[in-house]
Structures are given as structure tokens and as C-alpha cells.
Image (cartoon, rainbow, N blue to C red; front, side, top):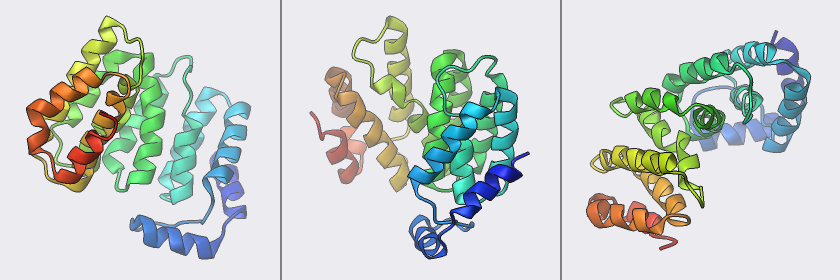
Length: 223
């Protein structure tokens, strides 16, 4: 079912740009060399033309190709705030997380995933289970997929409780010295500081000394 979508992506391939992208992203897969604008245009058209069941099937097929642009398009195909009967969408996104191996694809998939978390916050229990993973990208996804809770100007009491819950997970990450984990902590705190500087400051008072210097600088950027 995904073959027609893949053919559209491949029709826009730029091999020279694909080689540059492969060197940049460093993950060992095929890169067609498409721009984000091209992927956005195609995935938006597909999303409008397909029902949810079809989108899930096409996204699954595109992801399984392990082509960079196909995986990005798969994520974009499922990035939508309101989806009726979204359980199959969430199930598919969850299945992708253990396969993450590079930041760009992971971030696009997490953008789709965060919509499903906002739609049903009980799914945060699944995300919490990722915090104990030794898999770098699964562990990092915990903080990327929960970014919506850094951004509310007028959070509800339930939203504040989720902020504190995620900050508790982040506190458990500070001893992990891997760059992408430290970067993710800093990213969460930097975004939070724009809307809730008190909580961000309190976290940094408690744990800032344990962060790597670059992460501490980034986390403090707007404080």
C-alpha cells in the first residue's frame, strides 16, 4: 500500500544531496536527498486523502523501507492533533521507538507521538517505562516526546503534575554523561524556562552542578 507514496518520494531524489545527508546524519541507511519542504508537501497531501486506517498502513510500510525520507514521511503522515480511534496510531509509533538510531528521524516520530500523549495522558505510563532503558534513543525520547508540557502558559493542575513528573525523570538522567541525554535535559529545561522559570530554576539549583557545562549553559539560556 505504501509503494505509490514511496515512488513519489523517489521521483524527487537528489543523489548528490543524499550523499551529503548520509555524511551528516551518520546513520547507515539510504538517503534520497529530499528537502523537508518536499516531504511536508507530499505527506500533507497524503494525510488529506487517506483515512486513518490507510495512513497507519502506509506509514508502517514507509517506515519498514528504512529510507531516511520515507521514515520522516511516515512520522509526518501520523502527526495530527485530533485522530478518532487513535489507538493503532499510538501502537505504531510506540513500535518505532526501539528502532531509533539518529536524532532527525527520532524527533519527527516523537512529534507524532506527542500528539497522542496530549490526547491521552495515561499513555505517559508507557513513556515512563522507557526511562530505564539502556538504549540511548529510547531514553532520550522520554524528554523529546513530552516537550508539550514545557510550553503551556496557563497549565492546569494536571499539566503541572506532569511537568513535575517529567522533571523527576530528568533528575534521574543527570548522571548519564552521554551527549544526547545531556542535550535533551537542557532542551527540556530551556523550553520550560520560557513559561515556568521557577520550576526550571529550582531544578537547576538542585541538579545543575551535575550537568555537563554545555548542557547547563543551554538550560540557563533564557533565565
